[in-house]
Image (cartoon, rainbow, N blue to C red; front, side, top):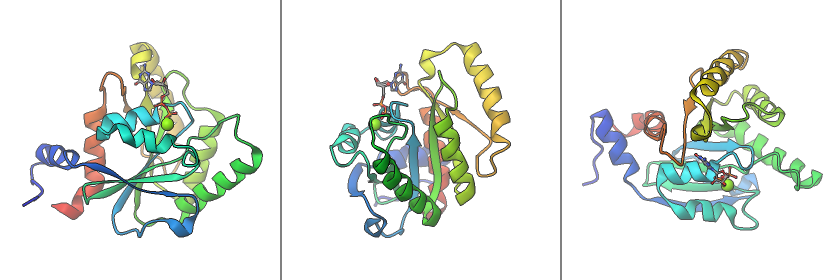
Length: 214
Ligand SMILES: Nc1nc2c(ncn2[C@@H]2O[C@H](COP(=O)(O)OP(=O)(O)O)[C@@H](O)[C@H]2O)c(=O)[nH]1
Ligand SMILES: [Mg+2]
């Protein structure tokens, strides 16, 4: 029997040992899967390291491949870990090459999704630790605050910066987050390349979904 362990560490390991499978690509809200499972979403500027982080977390190369398939890059891509929760890979924003009309369609889809999704437990908003918050990140944070969707900043590519830079950035961000009511006060510092922060992020995710399986 596939029974969830009660010990926290064992639970996280058990949960993440399940296979991650592609479910569907959604271009319009009427195509969303039934909100029968908890859901977590990953968002961020294009090139922030979203695909790399998702792959590192869930150990599945095809995850990124699916999300890179032409026609799917502008969609919400749904994956499922075991039968336990949905992972939503949101389209990257801030792509200069995307036309204005496409941006409008994108914004509307994201906005409607975030506004009305009861099963969405948290959005992980990825920020490149070298650059900090960009104008487009702030716009997304504002939208999340307005829709009262809980979100948490995840800094990526930590291996590319000095400890000193990271410490300062973390302090500044924590201060800035105080002005954002839907933002989770704690940041996560990660490197998909070095594996840094992945266990912590897995634990955070497990806590968001575990109540149903213990
Ligand atoms: N040094 C370093 N580079 C990374 C890391 N994560 C991603 N990258 C690089 O950043 C670029 C964009 O990564 P990708 O995952 O495709 O970003 P996405 O557009 O947000 O999905 C690629 O060249 C990756 O190799 C990391 O943790 N460390
Ligand atoms: Mg990607």
